[in-house]
Structure formats: C-alpha cells, structure tokens
Length: 394
View 1 (cartoon, rainbow, N blue to C red):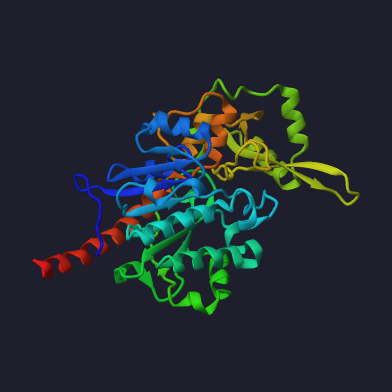
View 2: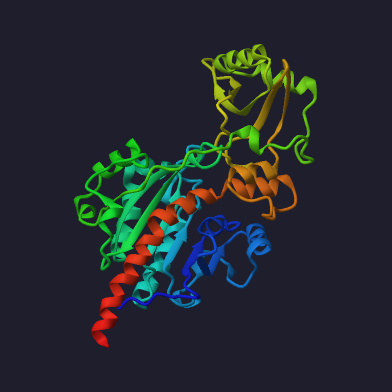
C-alpha cells in the first residue's frame, strides 16, 4: 500500500546531484526536501548557504544506502552529471567516470524498492546527448533501469528559452510507479506538442520492444510566453565582469564568423543599443591549424551556460551602443538570473566557482513548470488511488 509523506499538506522529495539546489528552488514551497545529496564540497557549501544543512549529505551516491534516506518521498529528483553525454565531452556515455554515477542512483532506488519505500515519481534531468549516446543504448539503459525498478516512464524535451533568456534544451525522463494509473489528461496516444523533439521520437523508435509496454507519452500545455530578453537581466557595470580594453574587443571582433560580423555591422548601422551573447569555438581548418571563431547572437537570448571547464570558454557579451562596441564576460549574478534564480540566491565567492555551480544546474522555472503540470498531478493521482483503499479498510 502507498504511504505518502506529508507535512502541512506539502509534498516531499529527495534531491540527488543537488548542486546548489536549483531543482529545489524550482519545486518551491509546496515541496519539502527530506534528503539532498552531492559529492562536491563547494556545491554543498552553496546548497547549505541557501537551504541549510539539515537535509544535506555530502557523499558519493554510490556509497549511500537506502537506510540513509528518511521516510518515503513522493519524488526523487536526479540531475546526474552530463559531462560524458554532452557534445563538449569525450563521449564516454554511461560508462564514463562522471555520468556512470547514474548507476549509483539506480542502486539506491532499488534499495528503496526492496524496502517498499520507492518514490511515487522519479524525475531525471540531463542533456539531449543522452538520447544519442552509444547510438541510443544509454537512453534505453536508463529507461530499462526504471522499468526494472517497477516504473512506467516517458520523456520530454524542454528548452529554458521559454522561461528565461537562455537557450538551454534539456531532457527530462519522468517515471511513475507501475501500480499507479496516470490521469488521462497527462498522457497522449503519441508524440505531440512542443516538448517532443525529433531526437526523442527517434530514440523511442529504436527502443527494445520490451520497453514499449511501459512507455508513456506525457502531455504538457504550451509554455508561457517569456517576457524577458538578455538585455533585461544585465547590470551596467558588474564588479566581477569589467569591460575589456578596446584592443581586446578589436581582437574578438576579428574572430567573428562572417554571419556574426554582418549582424554586428547591421547593429551598428541601426543606431540603437543592441546586446549579443558571444561565445568562441576552436576548430581545425583545412590545413589542420587551430582556428578560433566567435559567434554572436542578437536574438535576445544567451547561449547555453556551461561550466568554465566544460569544453567552452565563459560566455561573453557584445554591446553595441551608437556604433560603439564594448565586450565583457557575463557576470555571475547575470548567469544566475539566466538560471531563473532570484537575486536573493547566495552565490559562491569568486566568479569561477559561481559559474561552475550555475553551469551544472537546472533552470528553476523549467522545474516549476514541470512540477505544476506533471509531477504534482502524478503524486495527486497516487494520493487519490490510496484513498479508496483506506476507505475499504475502514
């Protein structure tokens, strides 16, 4: 029989690979954290600074036992490391040293299953590269692991650009205990809607047949219209991101691709103040020489934030104001706003530590949207399923 943990009506959750608690920020006050885990001490300090230490356990997830987890949570959230799955990584997949930590999380869930304390819902967040890693076998393995644990499952692709001015597409695998029937309003007969990317549909098509019986096509409403642009979240002169010297700006302009240089010229000719997110890529030319190319986007969006060591340099800003062109790095507070975090969120001291924390995080408003339209209704369905059983016992 299902037993849901309640505290003043709030739902409960475990947060694995918690980082600075951005999933917790997204879930909001209606959810109570029973347990939070990360292996990184610096991220743990950021988590404690914002949420306290009472639920936090710093340890490798593979070293945890089911007995370490209190009660029975409605939800287990896991944003396991993406480095071995992302385009910036080496492509080691779930066999890589970092992304293989998924299996430690899975073993922990299996321990909860054996103790009849499995969460009602499991939500897994990662990069879209999970869909194609190992020619789709890694995604199938994740879904197969959920199936083995007694869950039905489906996946969604959500881009943060619907919520904050950052292009950040991510994959969310949402699993529900097999004994719970999802409300019809939450599922579709097939892939429909903005959250069903072609890569997801292709990955599903290559699934082992054994997975098909437990697959669910989740349904979500259209996301709200974003009302912020990149310009809206910027500060005039952030102390941790000073304007670069004119010579350094000229050097960056010289690295712009042809299309970006044309966009810059159009911005200068407009006479308006325009802001572009700028990032640099290192490529090999036809002779095998290393060439740095800079790309600037003037569409009101930042590119996907990454950690300083994630294979790309920190994102920069290119500001055109009355034909004057200036450049600087994105500040830590500005990056936090792109992740949907309030200015009251406490960032680590030092730009590198802050960007490392944020680049590894999940965008809080995306979590909130997913919670409102899928996670919370699924837990409510479990509660409703339990009520008749209690009535029969009375």
